[in-house]
Image (cartoon, rainbow, N blue to C red):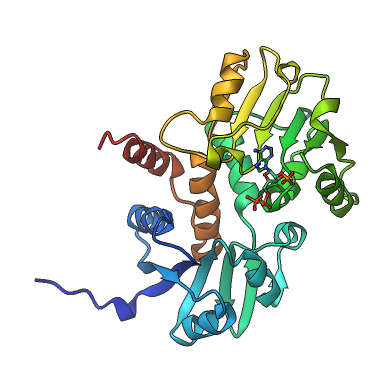
Length: 282
Ligand code: ATR
């Protein structure tokens, strides 16, 4: 039996609490295999009250980079010595890199969404009228890369309208984001993105059908075994296409991998594999 000396390999991890459900270790192992990068990538369940000291331990034991998930993204942002523009505006970090005693924080969720739309789905955001549903951390995390694609307009609709206004205020130097309540929605959009957590509980945000026209695309940032309730609703109301967030998950991981290793993995293979696993067909 050959026992690989794992201590010789570059060390990465995803940290969260809980973490057992995370697909990041299998995604990064597939990327490493595919690109011939020699690394180990583990899942770390950090104690809720000890994020900073757990990161310090990881760095001390030669850790080079870490993905960060719920509930530590804000703490990772606070811990970072330097932030990318996307991370700074997101107010959250999902990718940490450790080099020469400096902690770099990035947020790859938004670029993950944009890359899934542009590369995999061939949807070009430039000049499009975009509606974003929700105004929580998930939406804040993706706004800067969406703005960078220069859509013609971005409207945020949220149950709690004041939270949508807060986001418009944070991004006002970059883009004039419109804010509406669900009751005020009265026109159709090119792209409707669901960034609420409603799908998690199989609930639908109260969107009127007039937001959809035959050319409208839907993107649910959540994903699941079958079609999400949001996408189902959109397709029943005549949307052209509806995609879920599995591609975004893989693309955000690919961006982290690129930040750490300088190479871009082939995401299509990995998305197909995860899709098959979700549908229990392999
Ligand atoms: P996350 O980090 O996933 O974004 P969050 O910050 O708690 O989580 O935000 C959840 C978002 O989903 C919010 O925009 C929330 O609306 P409110 O701000 O009004 O609470 C939205 N949301 C959750 N369940 C919803 C539902 N059933 N209908 C509409 N919006 C919902």
